[in-house]
Amino acid sequence: MEFLGFTVDVATLTSNALELVIKVALAILIFIVGRWLAKKAVAFSDRLMTRSHLDETVASFFKSSIVWRTTGRGDFSCT
Figure 1: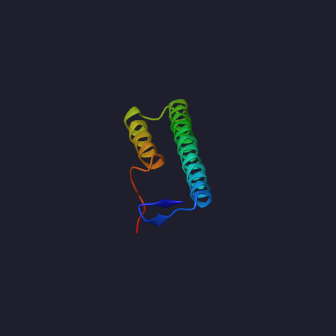
Figure 2 (figure 1 turned 60 degrees about the vertical axis):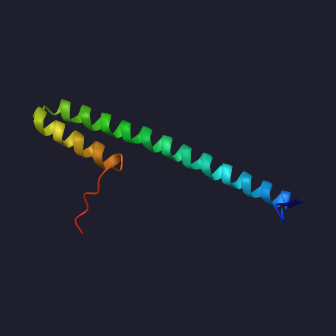
């Protein structure tokens, strides 16, 4: 098949498009599962801090730190 002066192999194009769709769908699935796990981790740590009667200010700080770290909005590495 000719398109704008280029030879296009439809079978290869279809195969590559299908491979791309699969990779994008997998990336979206990984993102959704990761976000769900991060929310569960934050909720778990919040319950744990509440049950241990941790000071509310300290608990709020730790919760913010956990949200920041699990959602990828910060890097607390000491390099």
